[in-house]
View 1 (cartoon, rainbow, N blue to C red):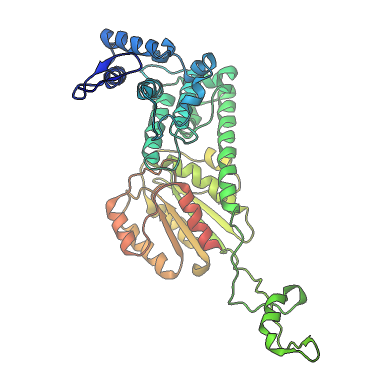
View 2: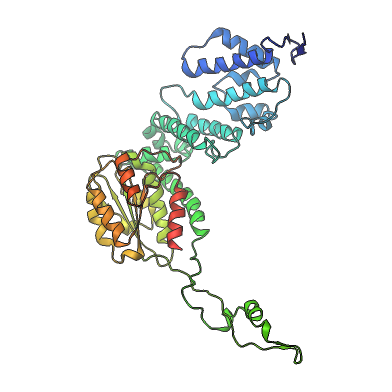
Length: 444
């Protein structure tokens, strides 16, 4: 019988269980017991400690109370191992056990968040640990990248972060400038601030506004870059080129007139000049954004408010913004400042798109020069489909959007989804980049 030796000197037969496999199972069983059970399993804890020490790894690796940052600060060599830790690659003999120990640390710190109140410092630590998970997966920003499975991971991380924020004693944190400074703006935190802003005052309200402003500015910078990359219109070849010297296409002129070359005179006789097309299609006169501000559409409200302000800053775009739940609110006067818009919104409540349609439809002056973006989960009055069909028939570029958020996960009423698809305007769902892409295609 052939035998081989593991890095700890154990032997096994071909038909037997490899020691490395057993040690990996111990680590993962210990991880599962910690994630799904409140009580420690002494036998698994002792076995896992023996495995970790045998690998030359610090016992702190098993302590969920020790952040990954702290672990790396104490043991800098681990930083390189944690990068791309979850990527598919070959490992040396015994390497899979070491990898299992490190993976268990990341998963335990990110997905085992306990219960009870959460402090600002704990939330920050969790975010940094999630960031290490992202590095381990080969992505940035807490694993919210764009390879297969990233959207699902992002949705779970967003849910965990939202739960942590809800467990914070947020009003007390905001009232303490030192604690408030420890907060990093996130969508979950902004949602809580927007929901609770009417209950805040004094220092707490000032700190809440500062956090909202920081988040708005950060997201705006990202979206502005996406928009500006191709914000200039494409060449419109239906417009004849202006016959001026600066538009002369010299290369084409020479090429087209080569048959007029005179060998005797050594000259090229030009009987026709060619000019470059420089006219560009202009942006539409009007962009109407209608956003459902009910409780299920928080991401959409924040992202589209910022996006509307960016397009409002482009030349020749007249942007109008309407928010609604059971009432509609025309936010156009503040469209250039998303911070002010968000402070005027009231998240939550029911949904009645007919009131928003009554406010938005009169804004359509030139249908073929208008784009209407309607963002909702479409669990709404079904008579709206008649209005959507009429707007589409009139020549308006109608873009129904089911979600405009970081994760791309949003429930959309199946009835409306099918009706809008049959109408030739399928519901756009997913990352806000999709909406930016659609708008840029229409605006160019």
